[in-house]
Length: 344
Image 1 (spheres, rainbow, N blue to C red):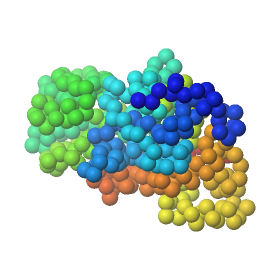
Image 2 (cartoon, rainbow, N blue to C red):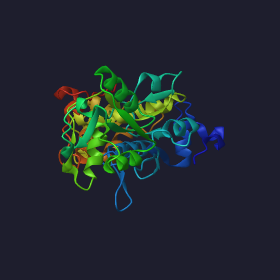
Image 3 (cartoon, rainbow, N blue to C red):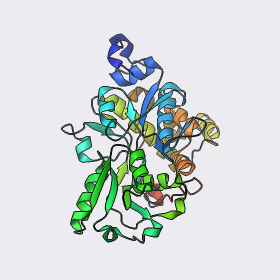
């Protein structure tokens, strides 16, 4: 467990003379490792492959941050956290950040609530319901009088209650502490349906023995903007995380990929008229210093995992096991909601 309080204050001095005071950011540098809280059992987002490697969209976010801060995407210790554990782990300093399919909400963001600081949304989702095809259930009203499996300590539990109350459909919630318990109960026939974010349902379904025997109902119960997060107690660290994520989105907007990164960088270095690109790559300007990060933090992140579009397609896109369309997760310039604030 990381005990940043044991790190001498002198070790927290910013190495670049920026004047920033971030115990968390400098603690990560002193430790030479990022501790990232993930779900750990969710295909497409954070999942342990048969060879022991972690993979997924959330895992790639952790790697991008480790690369930007430490210069190595492999300097990450992943910590599997269930829904009930995640916020306490962040508040106690057990993990440096969450990249764990967590919905950004008012009560989680507010200082009087969980006191989180959310990075840009990396997956716009909505809550859904999955039921066996053979059950004949095709919508929420078909669940009248039946049991629905739901993970406790999540927004899905409240959303389900609100939606079923709204349409006046009685049901019995069967609550479980972890997603593994929840889906095991569903597959075991203890409930007629299971509810969660639609991406999670699709990811879990992909690991079922017979995925085609289960269907997502058309109902969308809520908005679920899934976002990385840290605490709001260290604004400099939160800023660093926020702009590392933005850099992946900006890279896609400008057509910068893992494959063409070096040529784009060389182009920026050679052409002094490419002001925006030169500042983005840290060839000129001081964006990195302002964030307490290396000047080339964007280059490091993109080299490690590619741009946002590459991350999406590799882990959850139409060529992945989840086969999800981009939908709301397209760039803003293509009708979606993915939008990086200006690098200026």
